[in-house]
Length: 119
Image (cartoon, rainbow, N blue to C red; front, side, top):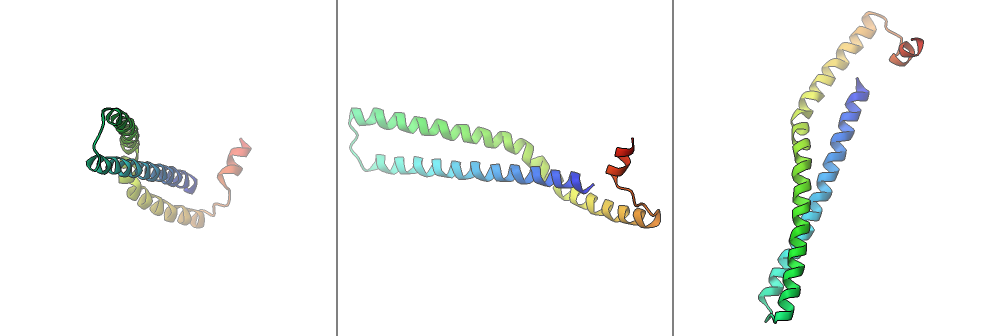
């Protein structure tokens, strides 16, 4: 039972870490876009500069959209897992208590690996 719980927690941790990385990248892009807007306010754009600036801004906005799309896809999986994580934790703790009682009451000494290796 603990092995499954560990795998679930590992997956949840991995997804949370990925969410953190995407959040940092989104923040970095947002700061860059904000910096570009501030730069735009303080300059007299020439036609040559305008094209370069618009191209750079467009590229950055496209990158931001890619990150936001990935975050949305990740959240579609991560949010339901987060919602059930507490219920799983409660269920695992209850099951651990029952297993401990069974092992004691029924004098269970075999492990699952031992049972499966006999088959």
